[in-house]
Length: 252
Image (cartoon, rainbow, N blue to C red; front, side, top):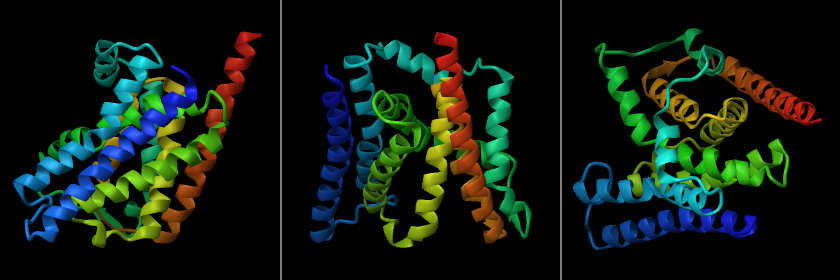
C-alpha cells in the first residue's frame, strides 16, 4: 500500500464512520427518538463512532506498516517501560494541570472515583491513540515535519471530536476556544511522548489521565493555564526535535 493511500484510508475511514453515525443519530432525533449518552441506542452510536479511530488505525497499521493485530494489542497493554518515560508524563501532567493547584481543586468524592474514571477513559479516549499517534502521525512524519504533521492531526482530531460530541449529545456544552487550545496542547504532548518513547501504552495512559483529571478539576488560574500550555508546546517541540537529531546522529 502506498503512503498517500494509507493516509486517505485512515482519514476517510475514521471521519467517514463517525459522520455516518452522526447522520444516523440526526435522523433518529428528527423522528423523535432520543439518542445520546443517556439512552441505550445513543450509547451504541457513541461506541460505534468512538472506535472508528482505533479500528481504522489498526486496519492501516496492518496493511501499510505490516504490524499484526497481536502486536497492536501488546503495544496497547505493555506497561513495562522505562521510569524516565513515566517521569516525562508526570512533568507534562503537572504543567498541564498546575492551574488547578492555584485557585482550584480536584473534587474527589470517593477514593475509587479516579480509578473508575481512568479505566473508563482508556476505553473512551485512550483507545483513540491506536489511530492518531500510533498510526496516522508517524505516517505523516514520513514526509512532513513534526509541527506540520501535528497541525494536520490537530485539525483532523478536532473534526472527529466535534462529530463525536454531536453523537454524544454534548456539543452545545463545549466552550470551543478553550477546548481547541487544550486539544492542540494535548496533540503536542501525546505526539512528543510517542516520538520519545515509541510506546502506544504511554500515549494511552497519558490520554486517559488527561481525561480523568479534566473531569475532576474545578476552577483554577486561567492565565497560568494559558502560559503552561504554551510552555508545554515549546517543550514538546524541543523534545521532538532533539529526538530527531539524536536519531539522525546515531545513523551517521
